Image 1 (tube, rainbow, N blue to C red):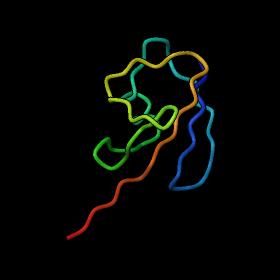
Image 2 (cartoon, helix red, strand yellow):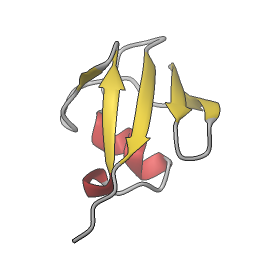
Image 3 (cartoon, helix red, strand yellow):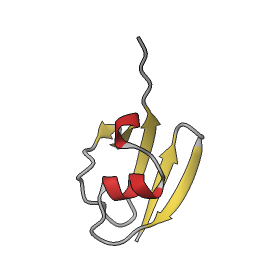
Length: 68
């Protein structure tokens, strides 16, 4: 199934072909992103990394930064 991902860090949109039943964690692994460095959002609402993806979803991946 295809998932559209808007990656804010690179200001790009990617279409990812991922297996049915895959989670946000699986998607982040494909994108080579660590879950503690990003927030994944759908319709401006954060979603957990164990959320199962659905066909034709459109997601945003936002880079998180912190400092002290």
